[in-house]
Amino acid sequence: MISTLLKSSATKRIGQACKLSSASIESPRITVARNILLLKNISEAADEESLKKVLAAPLPTVDISNLPDDLKAFQTYLDLTKMSDSEKFIPDPTAWQNMNFLDMAVTEVQREETWPFFVGFLSVFLIMGFALTKLPEEGKKTSKYMQLLEGKHDDGHSADAGHHH
Image 1 (cartoon, rainbow, N blue to C red):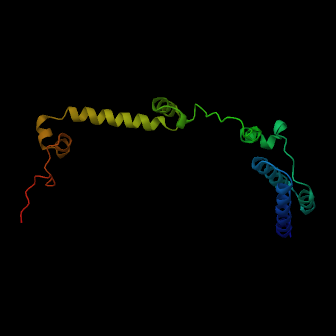
Image 2 (cartoon, one colour; image 1 turned 120 degrees about the vertical axis):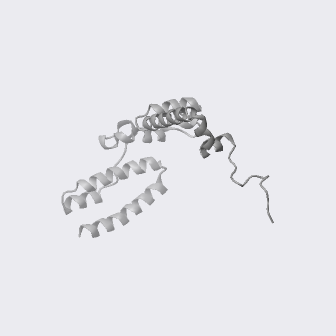
């Protein structure tokens, strides 16, 4: 019964939303906020009678300057509806795409989620760098890795490798 009630009400709500959008120009952000409030009201309906009341009521209104507690988390998102088309967009200087590489790298390394990767990279780099410089001369001569690094390894794919026909 409740699912049937919700389906029929959803059809009516879609019709209301279409009428609303054709009758007035409302920001899609405000429409999202109104539907969040409607969903909250539907989820709080304790029985069929209270659900019918919620579904029969008009869509909740949203006042951006006085948001209810349920929409406080969306304050920044909804504030963008106040911006007019003539206002110049001001990019956020702290967004990674607006920072130079060094500033962005320093900022990212300081984040709790990323600094372990930097420490791991630095540790491996130092250990491997130190280990390669302390390799004995005899080890350097027989190490295929060192030969590749120094360009002394002949893998048979060089341009001057003999072609036997």
